[in-house]
Image (tube, rainbow, N blue to C red):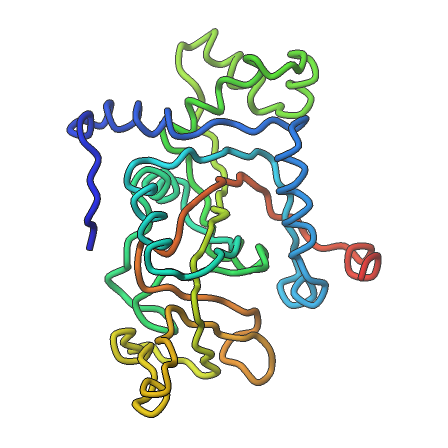
Length: 275
């Protein structure tokens, strides 16, 4: 249930697009943040998971999310509940859903997954790739994506070589007056406040967090805090092949970066070339 609301400008689609556009900015390739996120995704992609999925991923573009009033409220609520330091985790979704999330945060789904009605995340981005369905960019992200080169300190030639689709969009716009709607894939990199995680090694589709995250009576009497999330470890003794995390409150997950990526087939060099 949402308890924070943004005022003004939300009535029409055009107003909503303008608001979302103000909440994101592209991180260009020469910026330190771009390299940090690329390094993080590379480090998190485990060899055994590449073998399992038979694919890898490549970051094409990166957008920084400036928290809306709703997301600021969620972050404050997470701090108030003393859930500890957040973890940076990945969440794959459609481009349209990603745009909604960066404006007003996650929503608890109506239909449950393997561990009930929660918001699912992964430490390894390869798992999130599976859920990042292809689609056209949302209006606001498309608007920012068309602003390549403005104030970036990179020459148009260099930008065109890095992003040929952007060069083609600019040409298309100059001729036809509107941009092409390119199909892309997105995932979110989020601060996730897990707190104490309960480990589940078998699927529980009907998992009820109001009961399942409660400590047993003896432990409660000894002062043990309730759980705040679920951790499903990957491997032969778990319900999943690759570890995932689930939270059951919207305020526990704050999107920080929008990653536009492409999926590529894994090569023998990637499987055996690094630890």
